[in-house]
Length: 391
Image (cartoon, rainbow, N blue to C red; front, side, top):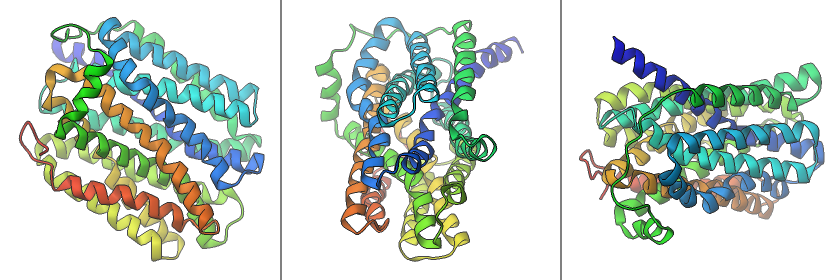
């Protein structure tokens, strides 16, 4: 009983940090509201999510190196402080420049958090239970992702200001900093000397690590793409003109993603990761295919939900496989895998350009996201159930 109490004492503030990690997914809602407020076209508005995920390319590997020197918990606390700062700016200064700064800080904070929080969780959860625990963390993260559009819409209707979401998330960030700071967590020391940049990037020369890295890029590209594009698809297909009437599409995506994470927590603890990964990617493919041709509010929401459900466990399976493949390089592997979240910059940029090229049709965005789906279908054929589980 004492051991269980100690475990929950450690894991609860970590899970609250996973909730804070979900603040990054408000970028889709914030982008759509800012686009309306500032009168921006799709290509220009998509700069905002690109600014969030650009920093994963710059800071992921340095964060892995920093984490090796100062520890995982301290790195998570720094990430939460940067995230808290990003919550202050748009509430007191609101224009295109302030949003670029806000999303940049949010991206930097989330990079630090993504790189350090997953290995911190691995400090208290071992072996085959890691994928399940990471998925539960993603479930908690998805709760924040799911609630953000609803809170923003409610704030817009009640206060005529969707930005009221920022003080709430600021308060949660501060509480998490204090709670985690007071929690003692024993971290394993990695063998050998601290990693260098060249040693981290050299890991991409390993075929398994490279496949995982590209898989993470495609996962987050689909995630951010659906987050941003789903309300636009409803507005385009249903003839809606008010964003508040279509913004629930983002919540549909994250509701199904939240459910998928919750279900995946139990499935991955008991059954084949290979089969579940394949089923997840098949759901994404079916949902994406439906968005090309189908009409009607319910069926479009069902397609968005399928994508959310399918994409809910892709990250956890890939990341856990990569870290278990090289257990002595968890910090470096985590840094590289999180650098793959740079896909959240690449995909929205090309989605905006493709949409513009097709006379502002969201089919252009779907074409770009479909490239990521095709790669995940390929990766599903390479996942194995053994320790070195991708070949």
